[in-house]
Image: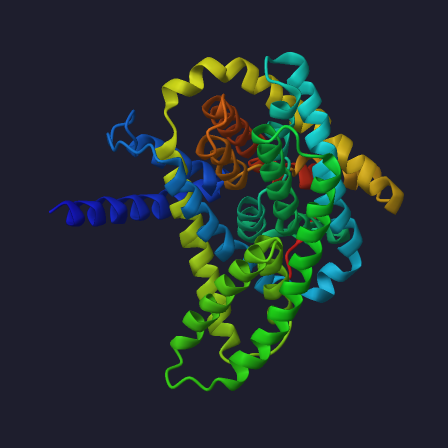
Length: 396
């Protein structure tokens, strides 16, 4: 009986989320907000009354979902579009994450009782723009952006999660092991990026050959086989010390820019799976939140959120893109499209699972920052693009 109830509740949550998200898109409200709020309403302090308090499970769901989202994003990314903005995107996704972490971390340390390392940890958790949020917002719009801004923002959001993940896990390790040297952490960062790229390239090229030559007897098995390859890429990279998320995105980017069996069908399949994973991920995160714990941190959450949106993010963008002579108008727009989504909330479960003091407060503050970012930034992207003269009709 319990299993049937779980299936019924899950089906209803999915059904309601999809129906309401259709309306929210017309109103310019990001879908992730809808999914989060539905999860909160269904939770222990909402009308659903479902008690769920297991950060480890949400963390696992988040990792699975991110693999699908990044793989789908990589498959849909055209190399000819991102090649002109490659180094800008890479700079934003590496140096930009570090600058955001430092600026926000120092500010949090100044205005709160968190230690410097704990403050930097919170800065690292919210340092990356969210791939799921950016992909879904841009692909639901009827208009595009000038100067390849859309491609730059999608490239940044698809490649900055690995750096944020490394910064988050490294700072957690430093908190738990204070005697660790900074030099060893830098070497681990280099190893993580280099191995992540190598594994991504090797597996990406390998996928093309394997998928085109395996000759499966049922066409429906090809997407299933590709799923196995995607998770194999992530697992092998992570196991040998590389960054699994980076490997998955690079492998998908290589695969998506070559011909392979049932390509159109597989692209549609992974688009659908990515959307499903987004819904499940946001619902789970919404269920995990206790609204009564958010109220006490509203004030400090707003201050940190506004500093991130109006100071830390613009500072990172201007320092990273000015050397490329990107126009000030473009930099201003990019600064505003620093949408935070599910990734920071997932990363915020790591301090809790690791048993760090203040982990729950970090989670609550990060959740609030994500809500304000999605609400203020996500819902105004299209309006701002039109106001700044950066919006163009999307090519069919």
